[in-house]
Image (tube, rainbow, N blue to C red):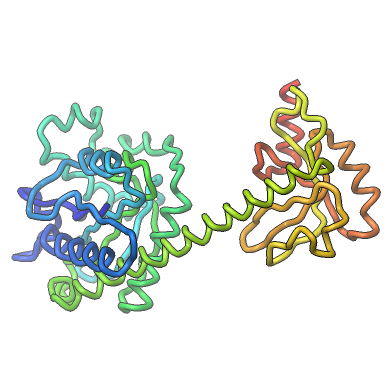
Length: 345
Ligand SMILES: [Zn+2]
């Protein structure tokens, strides 16, 4: 889903004849065209493809209804100082500093163009910092993916197009907070800066920025696809382990609170085949992914004493092996695990 900011009676930032709504529409349509042309199997939908105004809530609704995989909102920035320039891409979060709050306030203030906005946004006042407290409570399930995309966009803007990098930022944007998919809001540059305004109004500048967005989406998809095939091979491996009776979990009673312990024996930069000499004779071998490493474990029990005995047995062979805890398949700290187990009993 590509979302060109503003539109219709909402021009966005304006300097003379230069209007944010026109720049972002051109870049949005170009980026969408590149994506559809050059990335196989990707369909692009727009919240607007002409000069019309779409309410902020409605933009998220369109994306949610379409079950979009990504939401990219495109904007251009404005500042009191004509010296400010450069690109920044936001993910949803709390306003970390005054300048992020300002960008969010500016972009959120467009709800004043909507009828009934007091009702639709439950009294949200874009200009009151207190209104932003609600954003503190938002648990953004897609923060990691959103940040990945934001970083790829910034990389393209700065390394390939040569724009000034104002980095990936977090701020509280109304347009992002109702979307149920990874979402970013990118600011192409400041139209209040004469040089940047000229660049963003030029056909060449718009083509550069649009192709940067396209390349970022292409790289994002590559990363996500690679991760998905990794998850597939993990699932396959897990399946094989289930077939091996030796590796079946033991001691999974009602009192384990989802906590299991394993003994971590080594890390590998590659997934090892099950018959690899370093693991083929071990019981209940498993691994989890941590960054770029596959961390191999043996044993599987909700009773830490059992894994301690395992550690005694293997500590010579695997010098430096240590116990790790998981809750519902996710690595947690030992302190957390013990707290969960003792707290629940
Ligand atoms: Zn805007």
